[in-house]
Image 1 (spheres, rainbow, N blue to C red):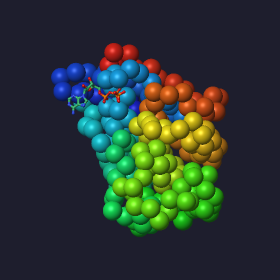
Image 2 (image 1 turned 45 degrees about the horizontal axis):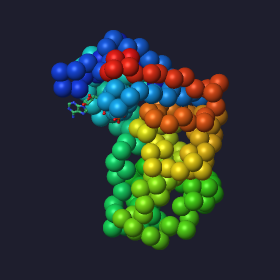
Image 3 (image 1 turned 90 degrees about the horizontal axis):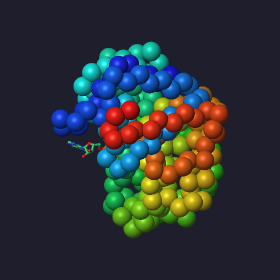
Image 4 (image 1 turned 60 degrees about the vertical axis):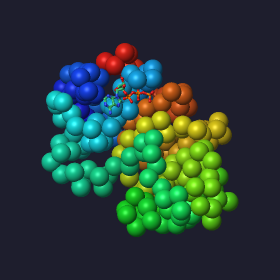
Length: 207
Ligand SMILES: Nc1ncnc2c1ncn2[C@@H]1O[C@H](COP(=O)(O)OP(=O)(O)OP(=O)(O)O)[C@@H](O)[C@H]1O
């Protein structure tokens, strides 16, 4: 379970979130919506520990994430606007590098994941030769292969076409069914299991 208590997020002098409580159980998703500039990226970056909280705490499995950051990072799969790939390396090399860094484990269905992501034909192509959407598909496949229990994703389906969005929504459903936790920001409806999903709407910078 991921929870945050009485937390404030600031950007410059502006309060994005004030005194908020939030809880996302294992097997559940929270999807954050809001207009451009409303604070979605700031909020999710704060949950991931990438932006300091102005007040309050974030707890993962009952532990303040600041108490043991390496342990939190072992469970966390983060995907922001930047994907962290090396453009000079091929898709296969980037995925191997991610596995070496612990960003992905040996996945029981690796080939199947890559196939469904439509990444298999791209395995020997350098990242800087891919389109934005292809690159995002590789990033999402890396995420699925990570096997990590907590996914924090900033606009995961950015640049992805409709079939890719449907594929990724099915991946989210699998993740939740297996007991994973998800928080994602999005501008686009994610067709995920409604019974497991709650929505947070940020209005003019304050939740
Ligand atoms: N580095 C920064 N320093 C100061 N203010 C910032 C910084 N980055 C963003 N902001 C401000 O914080 C507010 C929230 O930005 P944020 O990127 O979290 O919004 P968002 O909802 O994710 O937007 P979008 O939908 O456009 O991605 C905006 O008003 C923005 O101008």
